[in-house]
Length: 234
Image (tube, rainbow, N blue to C red):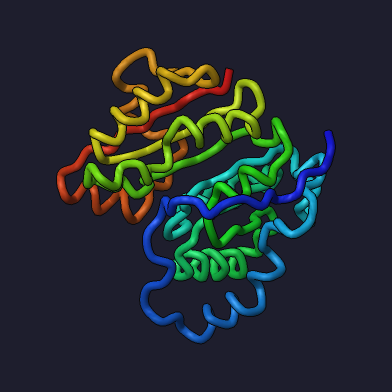
């Protein structure tokens, strides 16, 4: 496969909210300054024909997490599967700093980071790169006028289909019923994905093993029921 550079193009509509929260503690600020440049996805260079070569340690598979938030799930997966490479995308600097602290503390060598819009990484990757994609509790943009900012759309599904291997899974979790319905309607219209559920437990039960996330705990405490949807690349 040919190498692929990140394409230039017109400015895109933002699909995420703020970049920064509270001021970082000195150690985490140092990690953002010193460690993040080494662990960033190198979008300024061509994507290797085999993106698994991006990692210092040998990996056999490649997964993408879009919007890793507090990084609980990403760290859990990376620690449990050291032979899998993970690309984590998150524009919120406090989440990135938290991930960097976990990488340092656990000595993880199978995570790369993109601290901005995940679509840049998706556009950069070569076709059929990814074995799995995670989209966990993305911003639901509940106001009707903002729903065009939801990550699941015909355009993003087509972009993901290009970089996912046949049979690869897109795993999507949300606690917002309207967003689950939104996603299912767009999957039904997509020529590239199928919903794998056969019974109710398939969307009521998280994928195992499952670490949970801070956001999920808050949603459950607030009385919202998470929904776990698995879509397979045709």
